[in-house]
Length: 505
Ligand SMILES: Cc1cc2nc3c(=O)[nH]c(=O)nc-3n(C[C@H](O)[C@H](O)[C@H](O)COP(=O)(O)OP(=O)(O)OC[C@H]3O[C@@H](n4cnc5c(N)ncnc54)[C@H](O)[C@@H]3O)c2cc1C
Image (cartoon, rainbow, N blue to C red):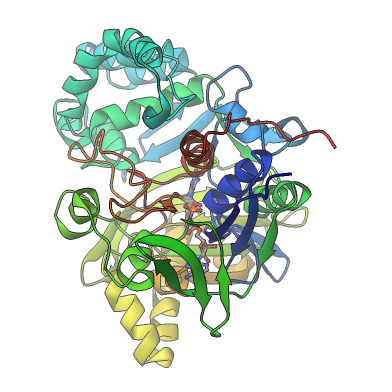
């Protein structure tokens, strides 16, 4: 029998575990080396007092069995066994005068809501909703990555995408901010500006509305830890092995091919291929000493084409009070701004509660999560490095201001607080080694649209990259799908017929 090729994967986030599962299915012998003591990377939950903090999932895409993303999950974890919550309203936005816009998941209800609240913007609303309805019919051709497509596949993609190309290009050239500026009604204008990320092309805000309309996005009861543990179990059931507390310090190369890794403790492990599923910049510039770069890597890390996402804090509050009568996610304008750091002052906050998930808090209690921006990530990082006492004080200061804001908005908060937890970009860097401590990698912009995934670096054989830094952005379904796509590419190169099914024993 032919000896199985050995693959070492760096990082047991969802990207690494997905790639590991598909490699195992296709006859490779894999091991994952993970610096932390648990699987999941950014897809993590942690316990504080009575509360189980979901540090990641607000919404998980790929939940509709008839839609194109679903199989990427379902090949790896039993999606039917997960109890998903689908929300009638994704979020609401309240301005300071108490006017509210509901972002209903159902597109007809959303249209009715916009038209009722802002009849003077009928023309823009109808145009916008028409666009969502148009994309609602699109089935994205994502079964295969471009790199393995045949001419027939490419023609099929062209046929599917052709009716959408002109319109996509148009709405890639309009930012959410520009779209909002065309609206006359101040409440709707404020709602769009607040709920949609201002600098992002409007096109990127349309797809989430489509997914919500199709129930292709939901919340899994059990949250981030459930998903990460399910992925870990699938990987180990397929024969893979995860080494925790094993930080990779160097990628070993020989005659311009990756041949192994060296850990922080000096141990070395050899293999036929290395897959980096951890921070991309660290892999290129530290683990490989910056010796291998091609034009795509230079564009990604050394030009202004790709920008990292604006960083946030993650403030969670455990309340001894039922909060379920409040909308699940609410953006609200503040009476007075909250200062975060020298680059960030918040004029509004966004709060999500987890009352629909009994695993988040005991009955009658509620877990709230807020993500105020923290654009000056280096401030938080350096403060933690140099002055832990001040770092703790700063976290407390922000938490107190956030609590004041919640008290002003909802009342009956301060007397019910049982737990406060503040995570900063420094925390994400510490636990996941993600370069700038953001929740995902790159900003989705017009400039990065259609940029190639950096699966490989020209000049270095047997080295592959996956996960949020290799693509144009992050998000769970993206990195899970990338695991599948990467293994299709590796199989093609190795002359193996790709399968997405586990071999029956
Ligand atoms: C607050 C927050 C909210 C989010 N909300 C959502 C959401 O609602 N929906 C959604 O889809 N996505 C959400 N995301 C984004 C999503 O979590 C990420 O895009 C995704 O988990 C990235 O996965 P990854 O495997 O590429 O990277 P990571 O999760 O960063 O995994 C990389 C792994 O590599 C390990 N590692 C790093 N360096 C080394 C090394 N040198 N040696 C060994 N191991 C190493 C890390 O410890 C980590 O486990 C959110 C993220 C955050 C933080």
